[in-house]
Length: 227
Ligand SMILES: Cc1cc2nc3c(=O)[nH]c(=O)nc-3n(C[C@H](O)[C@H](O)[C@H](O)COP(=O)(O)O)c2cc1C
Image (cartoon, rainbow, N blue to C red; front, top):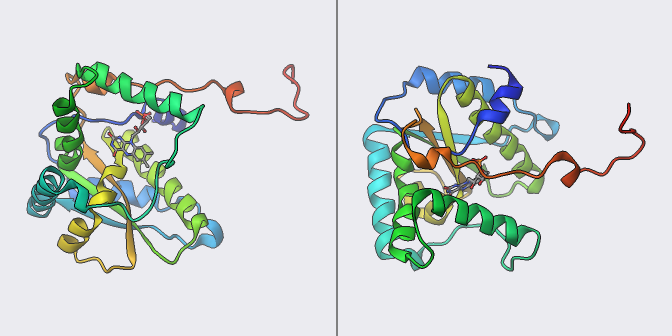
């Protein structure tokens, strides 16, 4: 698969088949993603790959925490604005409503919304989960690097016929996850990535939020439309 196709066909996948992914497959994805760029080549990413009993324990403990003690858990960093404003608010709403409409969740159905949120903590049934960590003394530039690495992982997975969902939702439960993985306090859990074979029959996987066209985010200087 060429890069253009991988970029255009990757989508967040929220339903996976019960089909295993091997260590060799994950290694191959990470082996490609390690070529992601980083400022002065610091390569700040650290990855924990979970499958089998460890994955299942994390899923069980985090689902338990998310169900019964949600307010006791908080992400160690802000991912979303504390106060939303346009144009971001509108985009966020369109994304949320689009996803819920695809899932048949109606406005005000909090139980169904919560159930969908909880599916995050099962990796949407993906057999493998990746956790991306970063040292907490690294500044924002290294977080930019980490984002490029995560996208590289997702594109490499796409090219290998697998699918992914990047998941900030895990960050809220970083203490539970770190406790099971044994990662030290100075490692910040940035996000999870669900990894597996997509379920082609699941309507949720057909949800593809729209994008701005190029002129919606680009200001041209000195390159004429005709050139
Ligand atoms: C860093 C990051 C964290 C995300 N966290 C979640 C998440 O916790 N749960 C979820 O269902 N989707 C999550 N998403 C997926 C976004 O909603 C999705 O990327 C966006 O709507 C665009 O859709 P697409 O990925 O299908 O192109 C996350 C995406 C990114 C990049």
